[in-house]
Amino acid sequence: MIKKIALSLLIIAFSVASSANAQTFRILDKNGNPIKSAVVLINKAALVGAHGVQDDVVIDQVDKQFVPKVSSIQQGSTVVFPNSDNIRHHVYSFSEAKPFELKLYSDQERPKVTFDKPGVVTLGCNIHDGMIGYVVINDALQGFVTDASGHVSIDINNAVSEQSQAITLRVWHPWMGDNLDAAELIELRLPTQESDIMLDVAPPAQEKEEKSRLEKRFNRLGA
Image 1: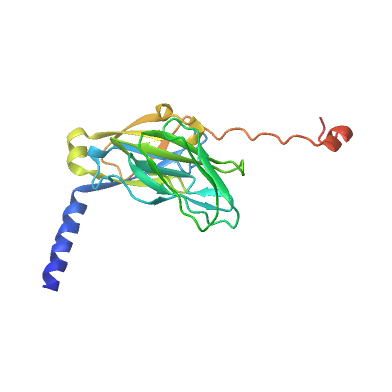
Image 2: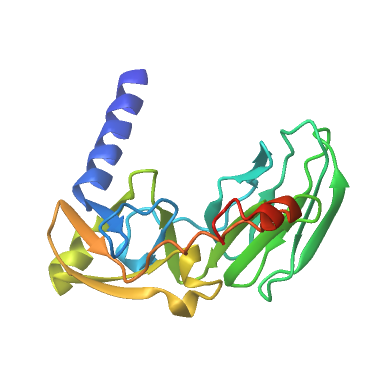
């Protein structure tokens, strides 16, 4: 019986793998540098094993940062916001897709929020201004987030790719603002094992720190 079950699982796994065409993409900015935490959106009908509603997606708080900084979930999914810091946080969002507030709480609590409208939700902390995170909520599309080297791998249904020989991707990054309409549309010919996608975006210019009164007085910064 055990052998039969194992054989059945192997057949199922082989069937899924044979129907999928794993495509790896690398997302670059206009200077040719890899972009971490870009969201690559694709129609769910083109995927093998597309995600439905997800329960208990985790966005933690570590060293006064949201981890991960960018998340992609399906509409109706629930996110848990644990606090792994030894200080309290006050998580909130004013975004139209999901305004909410989680007042000061510690690492003993794990509040949850259900995201029931598509769009981009910008997260903040009322106590720590440097804490910024993003949740991309999808409906007909599914999003994949690039890793630290700008790469993302997507299992595309062979039947779909063979019929059209092209796929359309929408690529979004926080540098584009908090509206998915700003995402760039990319059409790619298939098949391809790896493809670089260059976006017309670049990191925002670093803001100069305000000079102290003493620096201004003695003109130490040459201004």
